[in-house]
Length: 478
Image 1 (tube, one colour):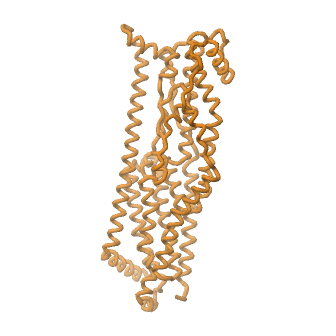
Image 2 (cartoon, rainbow, N blue to C red; image 1 turned 90 degrees about the horizontal axis):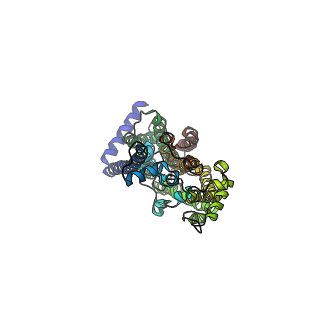
Image 3 (cartoon, one colour; image 1 turned 180 degrees about the vertical axis):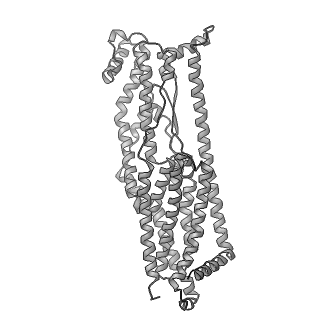
């Protein structure tokens, strides 16, 4: 039996290499795959260069503040620099800190939200929400068409490749009158078709894994401890996604209909699973969980005191701020020093406090939409595997929600660092800069938890379709 299987595989190989159209298709998809890999790498490298540049600027800026304590003040410029370094009335809104979204090595393979959301913010002690939403990125074109990355090639093009190569199995022999001769073989028609199906399974899935491995090697060190599990998930995900589509094709082939029927049916399934269902789910989630971002327009406008020269208004703002945040409380008659700076510091903090409900509601709406989409991803393997790839590269919506949580914590640390000095009338010392706030990302749920669930759905679907297809092929009637 094994020798007969080898003969079938050899014949399929000879048939394949003589078909220039099929070879052209494979080469074309390979070229597109390589182009997608390097397109993603170019985008990520550009962002990493920006991150390196702004990190360098921040380090240089704060090194300058520390050096201001060492240099003798001999001119007006040095005096100004020393004042900016020591006086919290200036420092709280002039010193800038970087909150940087850590870009994963494999973000380039599944860009996801990476080019739709800011990947860094330069923050001061001023209103957090003003700084975040002032330059919030919205790219309608990208939101509509998505990204040209490796995940796009795997999810959309490889199923078409599988359909093209396998839709005529069994049906072609039947239409060409070869089927009666095959029935005379001791191996059985079903095993011959399965052998042909297995040949294309190895060929196309091998190509998908090869392109994926190339992308993984070009994007990062696959031996690095943090990358080993993501590499495993990517490869297994690609393998199981291709397996799913081969399972679908085996089921269609098992119906023993004409090649025209197989082509129309398989393309119809591709259209429904990859285009129609995602579009319907997007419309449905928009209706069920609408996002109202109109309050954000007011947040992104800078506000100021009605009368900057009125000390009573300044004192009132400061006392309102103390009631909201008593950590910095001082009696009214003790805040006259740097009154304007304290009033503006209190005003920006009050704005954030008053806008917290709007921002929380907005983010809750985004989170609800994302959770609902995750619950419904079992309907389409395309949504399922896309979410999995985004999780691997940390370019999914949840990762950016953790980034936003981290920014809030980081900004609270910045304001605490300066407000303790500002409201308590203390100078910033050189030693304080050694303990200045450092941005850290809030960790979410581990990839392992999500990955096993997502892959399990695809594995189950593959075995279901492949088993039904195999049983249908074994039927005696034609």
